[in-house]
Image (cartoon, rainbow, N blue to C red; front, side):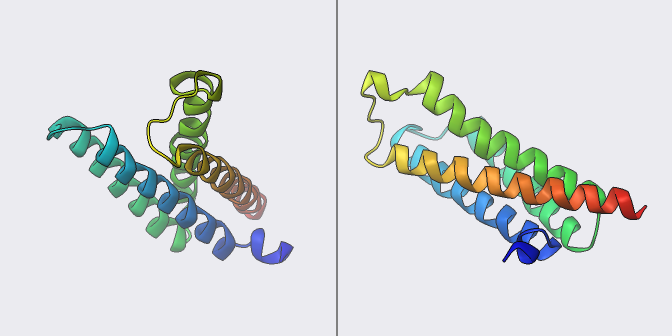
Length: 131
């Protein structure tokens, strides 16, 4: 299991899981928080989705830039969102229930982002040592 986690396939798979948790959370945000058609938010979300997909496809082909981009997306969109939600936007102390399962999505973001970030950093270190 450790070998898989530290492999390129493991890093990409964990990045895909992080991407999917962010996508699921994005759908819930659209349902509960973004009333109406907010074109700027939709375009911004599509740009982030496209960027992350591009990064994963590039990383699969062995691109160092793709790995770095996947790491940045995992850090910002998974870990960053989870920490901002927990500490600033909707802390548990406020009893904030924007939607029913917000904190389970928040934990999914944090855990998948951390696992992906660790695996991606491991891949970046291996690529640097090989260069």
